[in-house]
Image (cartoon, rainbow, N blue to C red; front, side, top):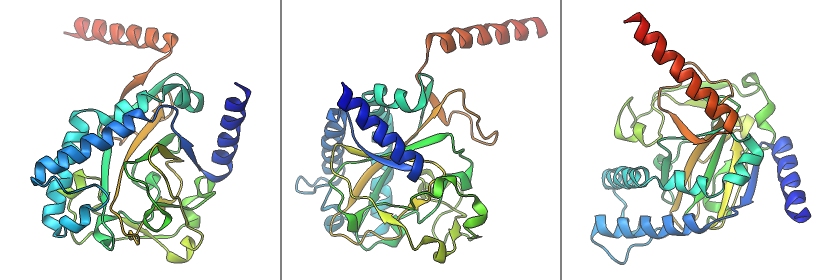
Length: 283
């Protein structure tokens, strides 16, 4: 018991100082099952029983085919609620970080990044550039072992530094438009490109199956190219305390309920009853 508490305290201290942590998931079984499900679905879609997640790039080189497959696999991942299942299996851990009132992203992203394909990457950014708040977490879960050469990178300590320390230039993406398939997959149509001189201390974060990279949404993160020899498969699933401040511009339905304390659950029932009563009186 004490070892578990000390480990959590160490993780929290590291997160507080650096804006990220790598955690061995308490219950990794849903991750293993998701890996199996994704590989089986990939083989079904391609009609190729020899294709694996790691060697995906050896079979799928053409960008149009890649984007279509990623879209179909993302729909599979979302329809089967694989991301929510993974997070729910670690609920005690995330409750220790966020409290008992937790919302989870309703449409998490599935990322497939082939070696040497810059177009498969989002680039370095912080999600507060695009409407999220620093009260949110991103949980990156890999479905393959990810060495440093293939990994996402993090800028330690950037989560508490203001935007003014990271000058950006906003550009139009050459291959992503608003509402396009790639945009629905999490690619940006008008990305803010951070001044390269601000990124010299980016740190690659290797991961193995069953681990997760948990980071503050305000932490600078991303990748510009997978320089390894495997395709990187991962999902990023966002979490937030249900009572934390939200950006008013965040689209409706972005989050859904994961867990509630009995006090908050009762309060939500009361508030909904009040709204229903007021609506009936108004009509």
